[in-house]
Length: 158
Image 1 (cartoon, rainbow, N blue to C red):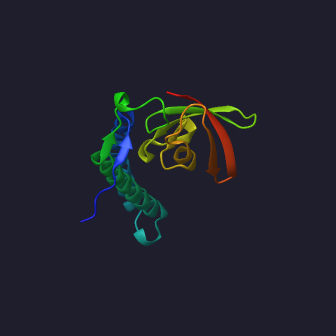
Image 2: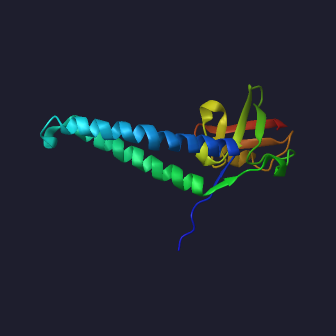
Image 3: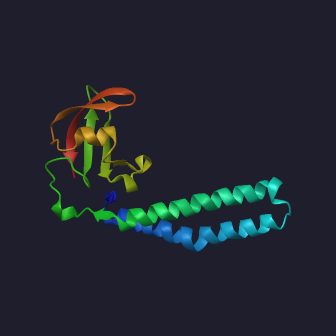
């Protein structure tokens, strides 16, 4: 029997997934069913693009519900008080400067389930996070990115 993947996340991240799941189950699912019902009333389903579109959306919504339920069921909550602040780890925010004279950047390292680069949350599976994990303030690190190597110095860990 295969073991299920564990999804490390913060409590806030789990709550956000639970809210999305509730929205999908109570609102979105009903909207899609209503769209299917309306599209069926148009007649011949073999050439009904509205019906096809609604059925595709229904499949997406049901797939997302299944994914979210699995992630929530297999969530491992990261406890803030258990984390060390002297090394980069899951649940911490790391600030670094690109060398030799780049801008300062900060990222929170979170589980893949709650990663959102636009909000400054990167997955622990990302190239940047993998390179920084376990490093300390002052360490200089070479990060492999899709755009090539980047050298950084860690300035703070919170």
